[in-house]
Image 1: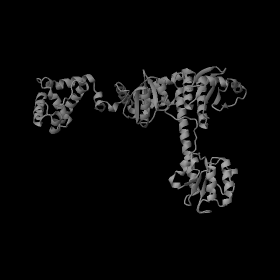
Image 2: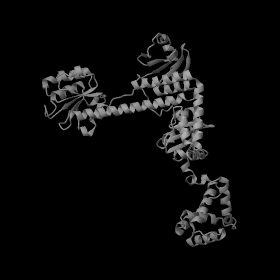
Image 3: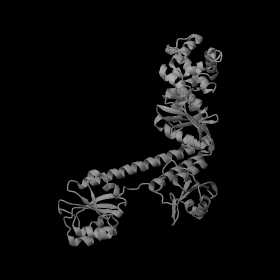
Image 4: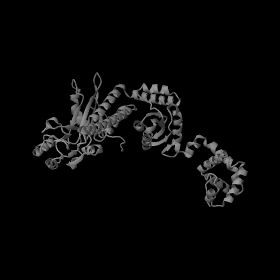
Amino acid sequence: MSVLYKSVLGAGMAPTLRRVVGMAPLRLRVLAGEAALDRPVRWVAVSELADPTPFLEGGELVLTTGMRLGPDDAPAYVASLVARGVTGMGFGVGLGHDEVPPAFLDEAARAGLPLVEVPRQTPFIAIGKAVSELLAAERHEELGDAVAAQGRLTRAALRPGGLGAVVERLAREIHGWAALLDEAGTALHLAGEGAAEGAGLVLPELGRLRAPGPPAGLALSGPHEHVVVQPLADRRRVRGFLAVGSRRPFSPVGNTVVTTAGSLLTLSLEQGADQVAATRRVRAAVLRLLLAGERRAAEETLEAVGGTIPGGPVVVLACEPRDAEELMDTLPGFTAPWESLVIAVVPEDLADQAERAAGAAGRAGVGTPVGLDEVATGFDQARRALASASPVARFAELAGQGLLSLVDPALLAGFATALLAPLREYGSRADLVESLRAYLACNGHWDAAAQRLGVHRHTLRYRMRRVGELLGRDLDDPAARAELWVALSVQSGTGSTSLRTR
């Protein structure tokens, strides 16, 4: 099964030293320990102490100008940094030392500690700010992943059978297993490989969570698996337990996602499946309001159940998935059931993402970008596109860029047949139709059209005069040309005519 989102496990990775030294504005130069540049930099520490390790936690890039350090200090200084678990050492030159003392280079190389030369023109604070910005960016991305995961869990909770849907989604989010147990420890829903075994493993521990003043949860760790158990309790009693397991340790964000799932499950246990079904009916009603042009009423109605409609412009998708519930869980924007279809109203900038998800789950028709007051137009376009033979069809890419699809096919066919009938009835000279098609396709250029047909241009001129006489139309008139081209396109699309070059 392909995963279109990041795992929330192992989040919060700090930038590597290689990434820091690769920032051109800092002008850093690696002098030793290059093989260890992929270590994470968790902070930048500036110190001129002979032994800064009492003030370090490990994982830092230690910066010094070596004012109090001489060559004889190198062995003890480097050894203390290595023992403390620092990521690397930055040596500033141009103040206490014109260059990095060879003794420090030798000791760092021997210990495998990355040693970086910091030029005089690079302030230590610039390195600190750069690392701080990288850490902030990593944290922002990590929080974004967590918010996205929480959104997917919330949408799962709104599905029929929301309890099982949340458990299944959580197992995917953590790339492990999840188990929902009732108060007695009986499994209600299991998801992910190893869920049954994991549920049996935590069963003896549930008594500790039922005791007065139960802890917020339990964490069990082994060499190959990490397990978290949370009680699902309201103000009166414990209603069940959520157990999850993964081969990788849970990061703080991973624990937050598990807690979110636990809150949703607790709410679902309290409210029951009827509430979820009611929410689906509300979403279907919101879609009907949008199609009726009642945008304000639709927004207020959806807001009442904690949802929002994306701002315009939007793209409407009409989807015919193999698993409607799964698709509604993965599509961005607003989704609602419609008869046997799933209708999605997504922001224009997320249309490609939604199209890929819909295509992977079944068939889909995609409308053109419209405003929120024009959702009915986008809905009609999406359903017309869905009616085509393509697994994923865009309305804008239909024949005639969607223009001919706006007209009733039977009317178009009748129009084309009546208009071109005089040419087909003209003895055995069916080549008049082919000649007209080539003439129009070449935009009235005699030489190009004649060459395409393989005839002399005077022959083509004669044929076009006969066409004009038989049809009673002036072929120099743009309106007449447009009507004829539409008629030819319609009949070509049905396979009734074809161009045979001579």
